[in-house]
Length: 377
Ligand SMILES: Nc1ncnc2c1ncn2[C@@H]1O[C@H](COP(=O)(O)OP(=O)(O)OP(=O)(O)O)[C@@H](O)[C@H]1O
Ligand SMILES: [Mg+2]
Image 1 (cartoon, rainbow, N blue to C red):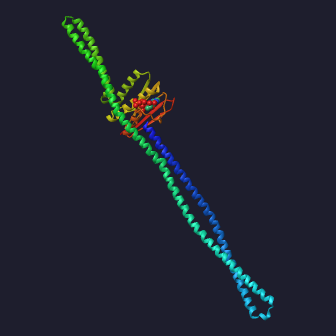
Image 2: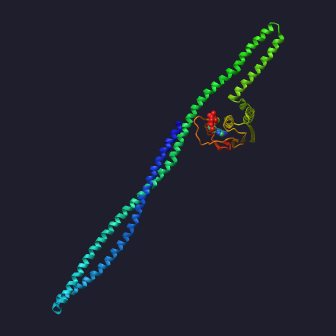
Image 3: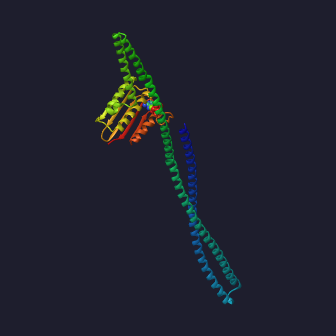
């Protein structure tokens, strides 16, 4: 429950952050787009202004020449003013003056155009900086987004995994205690009680014999022997449950075969067991691991899936060990987290400790296949 809440909270926080950062990235992109468009427009304006400046310069030069020419005429008129009529003199004056005024206006306009051109150039430089900055910022924000989406979520997964491991550790302690309680109850109810009974019965045998009833005593001994046999069976069963000694004595394959046969006897499920590759003794660490992994997978199938058939396939060679446990039962959603279930988590832990991989293929109504692959040299 705690794990789920944390996971949700952290996921929500990350979602909100991703949202906010995505908005910022979009805003930055808009700013950069606006700046780029303005830049293009200013560039066009600059071109036009430059052309105009050129035109005004040419026009000015032409006017300048006209003014010079007019001034020459004026000085000529001044020099020989008796040769010209009053109207002619005024006309030359006026046209020179008009030309000079025109030239002054043109030069002012040209100057203004130059100022505008310089201003446009300054704004273009500043806009280029803005665009560059916006693009740099956009790239950085994208990196942040990537971190948020990938690394942060990974951190979230790691936290969840760490929490699961912690819970698993606690569960192990609890399970140990539970196991001890179970064993003590089993020994108390089974072999201990039987031994007490045997002791009592042996006293009866003693008394019966002493009282001169040897036939009766023999009968009693037979029944005591039966009790001893069943005590022995019980003790052996308890020991087997604790840790199948056959695992150490005979190895993985015979122990698994025996376990699966007994399981089949006690349940209504058909179990097919096949071994591929060469049957040989393995490092004890791997034998225990593969026994427990198969045991948990088979127990899960029987406990949860209501299958009719379970297929267990073990493959061993000098590179890897594989085990596949396939059932034709109900199936389930492996992604769904379960608070009080530790079997699958324990399997995952065991496989990880051996640098292997565990894959679960399951679909509701279509059965489950658990595949474990562990490197083994
Ligand atoms: N073969 C299967 N078919 C259907 N459901 C399964 C199968 N294996 C596991 N499950 C589902 O996955 C859950 C988790 O399994 P897991 O072994 O982790 O826990 P558990 O068996 O419920 O408890 P335990 O901690 O005792 O193993 C089960 O409760 C069950 O719902
Ligand atoms: Mg289980």
